[in-house]
Amino acid sequence: MSFPSPTKTYHTEAYQAIDPALPALSSKGKNVVISGGGSGIGPEIAKAYATSGASTIALLGRTEKTLLSTKTQVESAFPGTKCYFYVADVVDNEAVKRSLADYATAVGSLHVLVANAGFMPNPGSITESSPEDWFNAFEVNVKGNYNLTRAFTPHATKDAVILNITTGALHIPYIPRFSGYTSSKMAAARLFEYLHHEQPEKFVLNVHPGVIKTAMGDKAGLEGVPFDDVNLPAAFVVWASSAEAKFLNGKFIWANWDVDELKAMAAKLPESNDFTLGLLGWP
Ligand SMILES: NC(=O)c1ccc[n+]([C@@H]2O[C@H](COP(=O)([O-])OP(=O)(O)OC[C@H]3O[C@@H](n4cnc5c(N)ncnc54)[C@H](OP(=O)(O)O)[C@@H]3O)[C@@H](O)[C@H]2O)c1
Image (cartoon, rainbow, N blue to C red; front, side, top):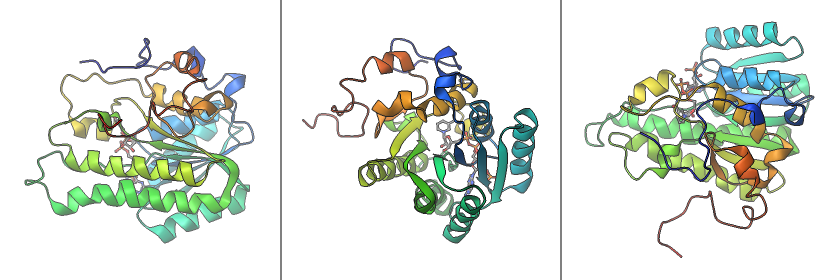
């Protein structure tokens, strides 16, 4: 199975133009917050920012062991990057506020937020679902990101980068058994669009990471959909944080789309509704 793409080239793994080691994509001097930094896609995102020279990285999640493991891996491979970790449930507003305040006290202003932590309810129909499990997707994906963006803002630089790891499932009319995941991720994507309009000096982007083999990727159990390499979204978010991606501010982009072909659209994209959410057929 393949997905439609606005770029002729559809990537399934990292490639030269988004190599985080490229000087043009340098994160030197940057302080980067990654939620869900202990497992899944998050640790690879942390390694990609470290490759690009980030000064410090804050890892948020609920599991101390996995956060510590990411910190150890990053700091041993990239001695120039210091990792902080905060055991916090994104749904717990006070814990998130305290974590980001402590991080800012330690490092100063915050430059990048990657809102990556997410939850997928057990796939199933609406009537068969457990209300607690179904609505937990709204707790983590919507309330969690609401808490995170509000906790980040007071410590963020004026031109900070905010990347929401969303899902391309929002562009597919119907995926059986996905109602809780898709509707909560849709609400979150709109939350980040609002943030873009409310804080226009910042760079806000919704990013679909591709289909990645993680605990969530396995839970989704999408038959016939091949996995992309986790290096693709990791490198892509570093590229998306760089000056090269500024023309995409406020958009919704898939990590699979070729950045050189996207750059060729730079003149027309900012003024168009392309790559934003809307209603098909509405003029
Ligand atoms: N994998 C895919 O194919 C795919 C496709 C499209 C979009 N995405 C999106 O990509 C992001 C990462 O997904 P993934 O595949 O890496 O998922 P994952 O393997 O389930 O990992 C989720 C991460 O989020 C953290 N997390 C979950 N609930 C949390 C909470 N309440 N508070 C703090 N941290 C929490 C988890 O750590 P703890 O459990 O330790 O807290 C874990 O590190 C998600 O937003 C997901 O929706 C993934």
